[in-house]
Length: 247
Image 1 (spheres, one colour):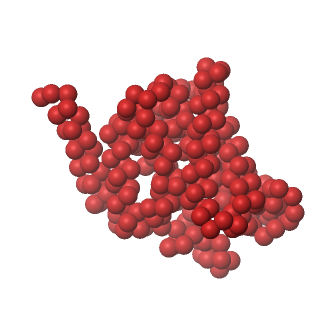
Image 2 (cartoon, rainbow, N blue to C red):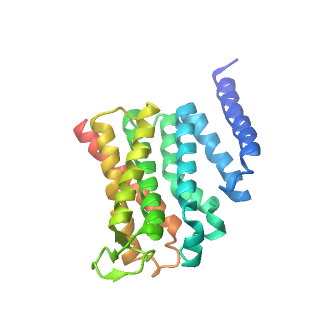
């Protein structure tokens, strides 16, 4: 069997495995029907490019993100702060959150750039997004006083660009948990690299808040999903750039 045939076989296997697993998992109230189809495409990319480690960490990310979204759902619905579709994620949510990671995974498979740096960027993109999800969902439900990040004016919880103590602590937890998942999966070494992933993942939530306060709502195309993609991309680029100079 030639090299091309082996390559094609590995991608077919990745597609088959993801199709089979999603046919079982789609009964869970995590994604919409279209969301599950796109999750299959994302899973195929990750398994084909990074193997089981890269695939599994994103499954954990999706599970934790969906779980925290559903916390206090009844109360968030009453206050008009709940995510649409009962917290189920659609294709736009999936790629807004994981698009950066998927691009980096493809670059790693294609040999574009240094693998260790790209893996740090990959890990940071998901640490940034889980930090944002934890902060947003927990802040909306259990946050006390919320302030607009650009002016520190008191605003209702859930306002675009709002931050709170509870939300910030939740973001810290989200970034830490995702960083530890990346370390446990051997995608990022424990040490300076993992500290960098954690810190940038946390700090990137401030960028998301600034974008929400300054621009979101003023431009129709600047949806939550676009903001998520910008946040994760900036976090990944920043982590790769700093790592290139320091490590």
